[in-house]
Length: 207
Image (cartoon, rainbow, N blue to C red; front, side, top):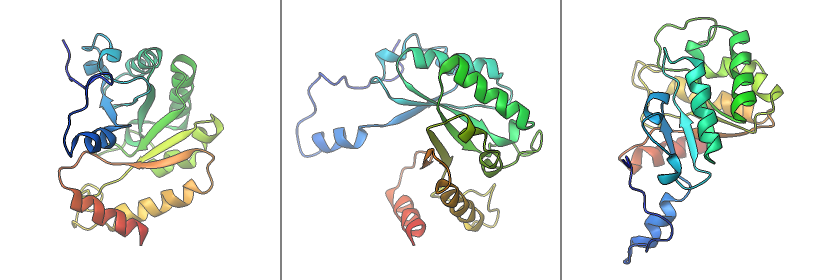
């Protein structure tokens, strides 16, 4: 059963003022899956264009074996795979190195979404994406692209007072890191339902 009914490229694009604009807007979209939800999809090629970037969310308690197996399957099906590396569920640098090696060796992964993760108490030494990046392991492994999280509408886990002071400070650090890594970097956000918070956020980033 198809979970998502995306329009195939050979089908006619809706006519009218919004047809072509909508098609252009949707070009290059990405999606996110978890191993347990991916297992319910018989073949992602029936749902997504070849080369679509698929993020794999790593929820606390998900074995790394399941993550790597999902990444390998999506790679075989022709997609660009970007697994999450949540700092707060990675106990130490040796574990991070092992995960990177597994993803590369078994799934040919060369991209990562590096983030703190939604766990309140870290399981080990890492509690931020910046600490993972500072290890240098992604660069030494030759990762081509690294994404980090952005929060256009703020994040009270990071800024309990409702401001965006800590969030913006972290992004400034990541912008500086982007100048010294060979990987391409980008900011990824959650889906939002209003354009204005995103536009305002981008303007603050550019200020």
